[in-house]
View 1 (spheres, rainbow, N blue to C red):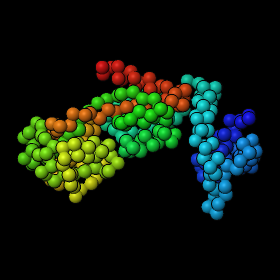
View 2 (cartoon, one colour):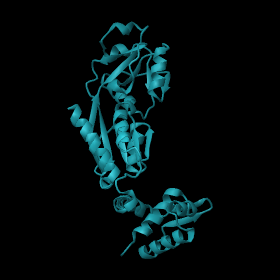
View 3 (cartoon, rainbow, N blue to C red):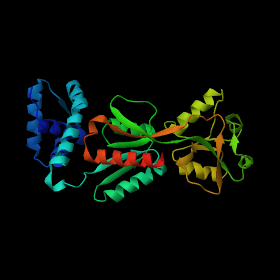
Length: 293
């Protein structure tokens, strides 16, 4: 069976943009041209790939299976376009990045911007779980976050390590300490992060390891909100030490039992290793790691 890249691109564009009209606009072709490519693909495969509904369409089982495999061909096509396009020689295409640790990776992002100022750099700050999902679903090219487990489809390397710390207000009795046990912290009002946040996952694991049932009446999504809550005396917060800025209104304390660091990684799909923007970003990140070593 001989399937063309244009057929795959048309099919993937329809899936990703939700309808034929938007797909045609994204591909800069007519809607009938997109429809024709889909019909060719269905004819070659011998199966319907899209089932029309009152709200648009749904993927058939065969369509879902094809989309899971075919997205890598879109990656290859984009990489080939970037390499072969004469007008783009010397320039990088846009790159999309998701990070759960903006403070740690901001110097790297700034240096990339400095070196490739004409490249469209899209940055999404979100949770580690969402970063992983976006990389796996090809919504972004690079993920910058703590990668807890290896994935067969991903390439990655360690960029930075830091430990879980407690955040206490200047007015707290804990402020005079340099380190504190998790059992002592549990005696104070606690401020938790969102359930899916990697910080909270690690904190829950630490509490459970010492048979502590953690209770909190406050759960906040963002680190700066947690710091503000600490400053206003609402409790003890938690973060990985380099994820928050220094501030004389609060102090970070080492947690005696927290001996497992968060390992921040640079992560990308193996299939996207051929993309010039991914190659340049990874090389720059490796150079910064070598400089810190």
